[in-house]
Image (cartoon, rainbow, N blue to C red; front, side, top):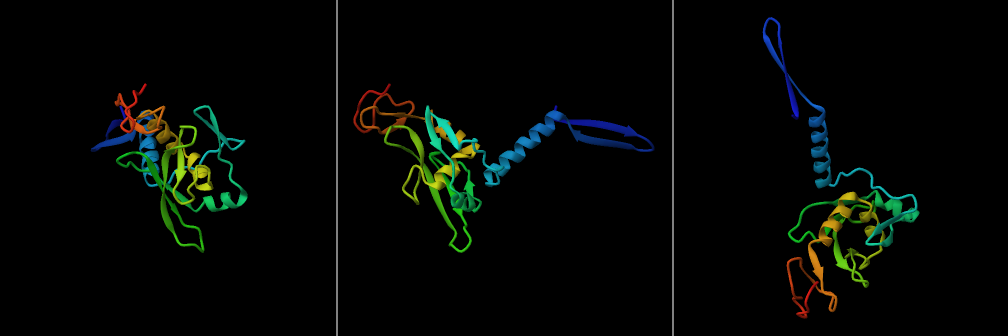
Length: 173
C-alpha cells in the first residue's frame, strides 16, 4: 500500500509508479530517521519558558545569549551504542579546536537518571541543556529509564531483570 502502479496504453505500454499518501508518510519517516542518525535534526524544540518536565522534576534548558550563539556549532550525534548510555557531541566553535565528547546518562544526587557532560563534569551545563532539547535524546532517556533498576540503598544501576543488587545484594523492587 505504499506505491501505486498505473498503466497507460497508447501506442506502447507505459507504467507509472508513484507513492500513495501512506508511502509519502513512510518515506518522510525514513528521511527523518536518516537525518537523526547523521545528526541533521530539525531545530531543537524548547518550551516558551525554557523548562521541560522529566520524572516530575523541572529541567531548565534555557540558554544564555552566548550559549545560544555557540549552540549552533554543536552537532548532536545520535547513534546506537552497546549500552545506550550516552550520546556523542561534536563541537566546532570558530576559533577553537573541534572536539568530540560524550554526554552520558548518569544518576544525579536525587537518584534520577539525567544527562551528564564529561567536558564540564556537570548535569546542567549548556551542552546538557542543548542536548535535552532534542526529541531523540528525550526518547533515549525514557527508553533507558525502563531498562534499569536502581538499588534503593546503594544507588547502583542494575539490569531490569535483576532481582538483587549486584553491588550490595539488596532485594530490588
